[in-house]
Image: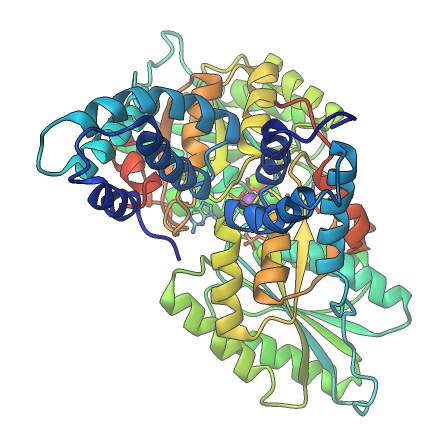
Length: 285
Length: 294
Ligand SMILES: Nc1nc2c(ncn2[C@@H]2O[C@H](COP(=O)(O)OP(=O)(O)OP(=O)(O)O)[C@@H](O)[C@H]2O)c(=O)[nH]1
Ligand SMILES: Nc1nc2c(ncn2[C@@H]2O[C@H](COP(=O)(O)OP(=O)(O)OP(=O)(O)O)[C@@H](O)[C@H]2O)c(=O)[nH]1
Ligand SMILES: [K+]
Ligand SMILES: [Mg+2]
Ligand SMILES: [Mg+2]
């Protein structure tokens, strides 16, 4: 997109860039329509200005979100904060917990990791390894056991040891599985039965996710009242544009971004960087 | 959230009916709906373009016919085209004349490789074979433990050595020969297609075991990136077939179409659940209907 006139091709290129980033057709056209008016009114005349205006619009739509990962300081010792991690299979929940554990430990908080995935083979061993890496307490249950009770036990243990924060892992589940979503609702309920308070429920979304991401966000929100999104695997070739739709259509803010498999590969979400990267063209075209 | 293609086209065709001949503009409108349906199903933009060009020809023919329901005819034309792309040769496994037959699993992080390794073991057992699993993912915490658990569940031995993934893969095949196992399935770590070092590692693993089949595992929820990923893995490993995972959800799975179109290799298996028997050979016709939301 350089100098010259704004033609049909310019619009097609912009739409295509948005589609390639997985922003989705509806959202893409919704972004381009108002710009067409501005071009018609001769407010914008150069293709490069048009791209800049589109990016500015997108950044503006991401401007007012609350991206803080909330920790309620007012809770007494013995009343742990609980952050719950949910999402479909294989997106990076357990790994993200490992990374968050390191960050929070470094921030001076005491932590406990609760292995609420009692289903997948070796899920607890995986989380246990992350607990060792950040030197945090760790609670697991029996394989195939009730995830709610594992998380409840973890919170009770944390309360008795005056631990500040419990990170609760859950098994990956497709949002279409009613029984598994019911199980998750129960996890969310039981997590507040004892001394703990759930101050974040983070939905993990993989950057490679296509249009299905919206359905995921809807269903998980309905079941657990999601407070934020963690966008993982943004170090790959996928742009993660579906979270733009998730945030702007459903009002769920993106809070954290995973950029690798190592313990330090977790950063705050930066709308400017994210939007600019959506338009970085790869070799595919 | 969105209507299936049938409903969408019916709406248009009803409006057009009674107009006599369809104009170019009418067909454009129909094509717009087809394009939207394919994009919503996550079919890659470039693939959508080429598919739509071909469908356009069919659509013109179908809308001009005197049939009662031209909408259905267009849908059928689209469906046939998708089946044609998805279908072609179905993969029938040819066993190595000198056992073991070696299978290499590859793909992005979390796509479902280790699970599919366990599922394939079960499938090969049902074909009367005696597989051995090799854990060459020494990266992800507890990856080998995960594979060992799956191995126990399907009663198949698992080989791994914590030293080195390339050596593990090589030794795994030797172990199979010692034990007289006739199929070896090598699970590898998840990797990004743009991670040069990790792609080199899997190339070396492949070199060490000379696989008879290399399967790329792709998550059915994948969006536009599926094409770039598949091309890169194909370039490094020469993929023989795709295993499409997590088809038990509501993702339309347009990635299947995109990947088939760009690497020209069949979708061999569909993985449809977390349980190890939720696995079957791939059906192109079911996939086409699914992409169209029907
Ligand atoms: N490149 C990259 N890989 C990641 C990132 N986050 C997680 N992964 C990898 O993705 C794979 C899946 O991660 P997990 O943490 O096991 O995902 P999960 O959501 O807990 O999976 P289930 O519990 O099976 O549903 C692992 O191989 C991780 O190393 C990331 O930000 N970048
Ligand atoms: N619902 C469903 N879940 C699946 C399917 N296949 C795999 N999974 C789940 O997806 C998650 C990731 O699967 P893995 O087999 O660990 O994926 P992987 O590719 O080996 O992951 P890495 O080794 O970390 O790269 C697990 O929670 C699996 O149970 C499937 O067909 N349907
Ligand atoms: K995934
Ligand atoms: Mg997990
Ligand atoms: Mg694995």
